Image (cartoon, rainbow, N blue to C red; front, side, top):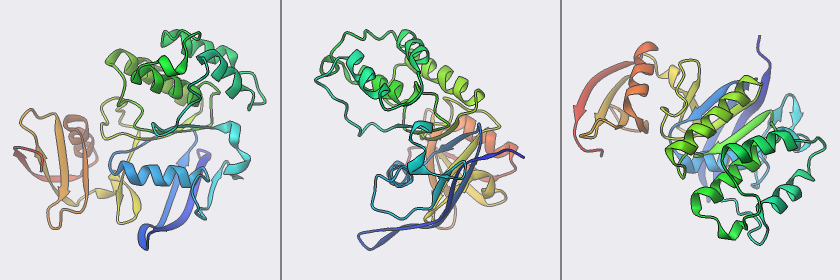
Length: 264
């Protein structure tokens, strides 16, 4: 039996009197890749609740320890996070590494070299892509047990996407559990990964959609898809079509029709 890394139990959360999460539970095993493919805003709220960055009473644990006692074991990337722009990159990592008990300089150097970063650069002088890369490196270099990533590929060139994928793959193989939001499952698609959608205030593994009937609507170039419940259109996710379609077919999800046209 695989050891549980992250466990969330019956999380209910209201925002402005609206039920955002309704008894949401999630259990992620050690060294697993878990991707949420719809509702980035909900993922943002959930991840901040897990990390105690919102006023919520979430029951979450990392290896049966309270999240707040597991700082060094967690990595977190969100494009909303701002860094100290008056620092150089070298100064930033010197500052952030001081929060950790262990020495991660070797893994930090590998990431800096792979992404071709000049540590003498001032953060305020970076373009948008390299600014996001610095934040990604900051979430990765201490080899966390749990890594939470909110849409990490959206600002990256194809070359830098591949560099990030290689590092995430290495981390997973080394024991890191990854929880990520991205609407596109093609970047790190693997039949052994777990894919989730938000549905009715809960997270549903898309394998649990088995034997439900869905319509798939494609754009003209067949690159994007929106899959929705035929009866009430309440379940939606968007992403590169072929990996999703193949994955659902392999898992016996019954897709009953395909219509080519514009995304609704």
